[in-house]
Length: 128
Image (cartoon, rainbow, N blue to C red):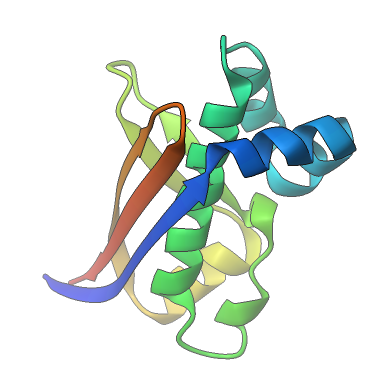
């Protein structure tokens, strides 16, 4: 296995709270998949969870921005999911999936964390 992409991002939760207050559902629909929206809205502090997903997607964009097509990946073409134990993973759709196939990505590793002030994510992409 070799690393084909790495990305990291940090998001200010207060900025996301302001964004949600100003644009509400419109910004959620632009940034998150329906499953992500449902999960975040159901949480006690939705902005922390939205910020974590924004950080994860930005980190993935950085890991995949190797060509012009990779730069055009849309927000909802990357989806943060959780397994039965609560561990995050990243599902790729559309152009994100196509970019992963072009780069022969076999594994995507995602780590996210959040607290009241910040959310952070780290993505590693590997190929065989």
